[in-house]
Image (tube, rainbow, N blue to C red; front, side, top):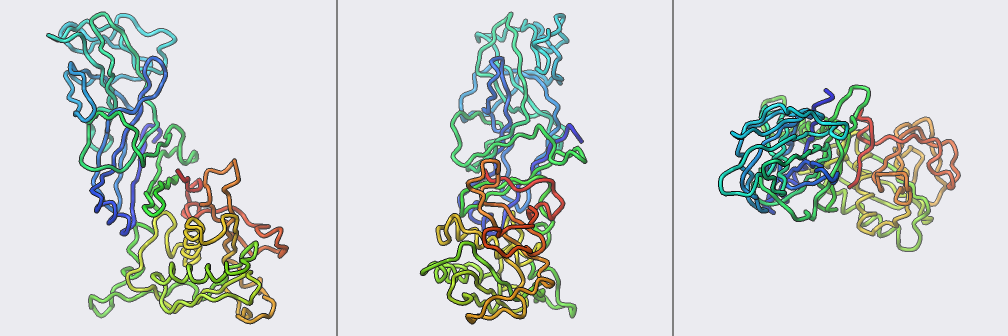
Length: 429
């Protein structure tokens, strides 16, 4: 529905454990613009404990309230009146008893798109004025909850206007901060605008996010949490049909892959890549072998036994095993690139290793009819039009042009999230 927004927060087992060890919670704030037009985040709307998946939903329906106390950072907002639903463009007055009533003076053209207060005719004892609170309707509880408190004191005879925004900020921080005022900038916070639909075809406003502890980075994607994440880990997908508790390890899709590099990894760079990739993938695959192909630095092969390695961790945002071990290898290569163990300008192609592939010095003969699940990674850090900053995948048939200068020729962009049917690539923040 157009008036309902949803944010899904989900974490891998490893990141979940690290977040819990730090004593962090998931803090969410929504912004409100005041009369000068500047959006402000100053109240923690929700504070959620760590879980594999947390769903936060709200309706784009807002209300007004007030408090007599000037609330300092770290103090919880306590409302002094009753919530009054107020649609954008409507105007309400606060009568002498402190209740909201429709205004006798409707807002003019400059009040369109705002929650308007025509006149404050209420004086709380022993204070100079009141402070306006803006709330949002929590779609899960059906209650209005504070998202903003005006630090300006409004005496009798005052008027004001507020414009709730669909921009949301979230971060990780200790303790339950629900309803507390804050003023400092959060070090690991990210913001995202929910104004436009994540899927225009269905008029859906649904996004998912995850925090990658190793990179200290949030990942945001259109749509719900990937089905590959909600499913049990590969080692738990199927139980022993004889009724035992020991799980049966599922076979992985392909036991042999080849990774082609452009430009070639020269000097000792290939050796570094082989060693680092082996270390990264050994927790995911049994009987893993990573070997360079020839001495030209153009390719390496990855082979493993059927079944995932004991204790393999699912990977957040780039699901392991979906679309298969191909994405696992791609994720590992990107982690190496982030860690400086691969050149930042390096690009690669991942495809099932044809039967003709050898580890000798003979030229590689690609059996194109068998290569229909290829994946390439192209560096996007220098692309000013990309929001993905190295998080792009490219999937499609093997390139017909084997010219190194056209390494990604004939490939169509398709992220793991697109493979799940979502309308856009993940966004690095």
